[in-house]
Image 1 (cartoon, rainbow, N blue to C red):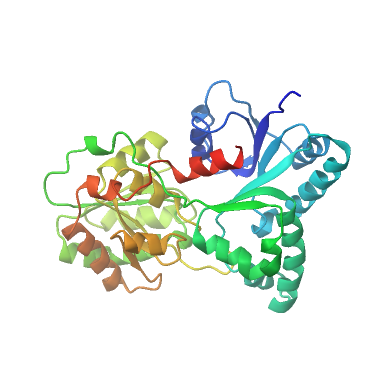
Image 2: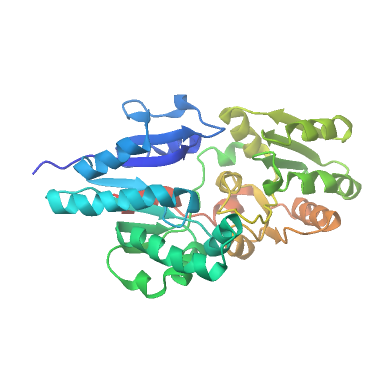
Length: 364
């Protein structure tokens, strides 16, 4: 019997998703909309990358076109309506096809889903939890395989689903969403005192850019040679640019290319991502953290990231998202003063990129 192809469906596609395809199991890539950093030129040659409608994806599942399809995790509230339809389509497909499409997912949501939904719907938390236990549970049991990218994500599912987590399917495993060392990480000359501070990410309140700007004067008072590079774009662009006009030793690049971002990460001494708590959002891991680690950069992050405990265990700095500007400045200054050789940071990373290892397991 001929083996059917595999596919991935992302509601929002980013450049990193395309870059990952170079090393992933070969398959088609569908997306509903491009995200702010989407660059189609990063897709590998010969791979079908197509913007499409959700209706078409549901039809492909119903027809059993693919052997396995990766979808957004059930715990993502904005994706829940689509996941319910895809789950129903997969179950119906099992009745009519000898080789139905199996659904798989990568799960890293670490926010409190019942409270998120309650805040947006104004329903009691107990009501939303009961409804979500049914709906998320239906989607979860429709999956064939689930990789949890953080322990927090696995705990979240267990807290919501309880005994449903123990039912089969799906098969599950925990593979931390950590990077491997980038081949070029050790080609950077690290002689001289550490001074380069980097922020990469969306310029909005969720990522802690305001806290970083507020602490910069204190940073320079403690470390006069420090330099700050801000790369990104978002709703606070104008505010960041206005601030940088008078803030000493700062540079801002709006909407940088991936090459510019990578070079900045390779030369940075410390990457800062002070993710903030929001009612309807919580940092899952943080791509700037992952990419910074891959080139041996020290990290200053908040407890909001799903790998906060891992960062602490590996010698990085993790502080409260509500830290004062003095506390944030002290954290960054402390990391600059004790900045380790890149090779020491890289030794803490796995031999295989966590996301690629998850991909291999999902489609094995």
